[in-house]
Image 1: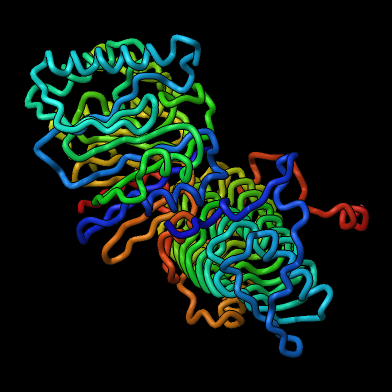
Image 2 (image 1 turned 90 degrees about the vertical axis):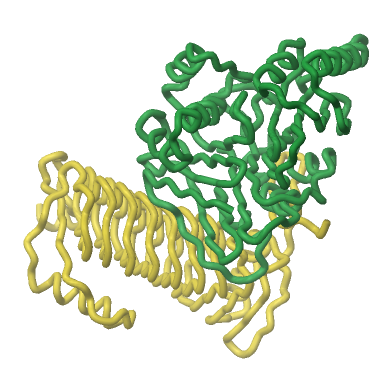
Length: 263
Length: 309
């Protein structure tokens, strides 16, 4: 049998830590500010080390990662402005905690992509799994396929836009930000949301607790049209707007600094 | 956490033992305790029985080897007493056997006779299904049982992170739907009305080999199908009658189906190709057997999907 993939390639130390002494592979082809490397035979840690080395130490601003192979946790924790193209699919937790990069995923992403994303742009050409954009704080996450369940759970800011449908409990405990869903939404949309706005272009199976239809304004039209224009998504469908009914929780939605100004 | 995988080919037989090993090995991190396979070979007139004469938790004392010999001899005596003829016997470990039997009687009678021997367990019984499970990762189990050349039409597999029952062969998946021929299940999740269903099924005359909640799914579905429901209808009923968080895959002699609970709490990634359907808890398992870019997606909550070969 040929060499098996996945965990077979990974080395653990006596404490069970993964690849404690992994070195930067330094296998990229560099051309000015652009670089490219093949991730097929690299582990997750090696891929992320190569990315950091290119971006933080070599001054590269545009990286293409070929054959990411749906490995988990790729492209996480990148905190600088740069362009990254994944020429394939990512596994779980892709692009988590990023602050600044523009990421293009040519395949799909697994569960919990862009978790805690702070800023930047992630465009996914395929589908995304559940928990996409969990606790996302800022930036734009564009998924051209469909999204799984609990999309944008605990979302605190930014925009999640999908050209497809979403699964159940999307926007659960959402606190701020916007979700734009061009097709259908599953059960419990916006359940227990504190704030934020969810736009749905298709049918909603059911609304969650304290999620109610909202009044459409010119600002909504301007926002939707702007996002579709920026990302060249064509003509937007007609959306319904959903917001928090504000009967479930007592709270205000001001930042601490904003509250000081008001008071 | 556990990892599950399934594969069904639409264009005949393939090296399903090797493909399933690749899928399961790539998900080793989801379940390091045990690995199991339910492989479907071309159906035969004979009955194939996989059974063990000891569990991994059986004490390896001075009497151990003698007990293994006694158990094997007793099993073969009881098989002969039922009028079954052993056409072939393959011994894969000290305690694991694959028997090819010329047997026309009831499978339940045969299984009950073997199960009645202390420490013996029938892993699978049927004309096509073969269940292989043991401790360790997929590479280990594959090598131990010589699965790399196994030709078949479809298969499911499981890597287990034990939570609610022991780390042993009885607690490992897949589960055969004792005593129904050629039906097996792998499951990722927890059933919260396990005891309720176990009591109901036991009252209907069924018996269980383990304390694992997943085992009742196989028997539950097989009983429904024996009452006339299709696999898809039985799986759809399970979404209302089995409580908990789960994604499970059920296989029969000619079909493979997947069901997700109403919360979609457990992952499953699906690839539907022209000649093959592959599904797994993680996409990297599917990519372990496909070397080009593919389009995959997650089925939604309360979805049941069935494919036939």
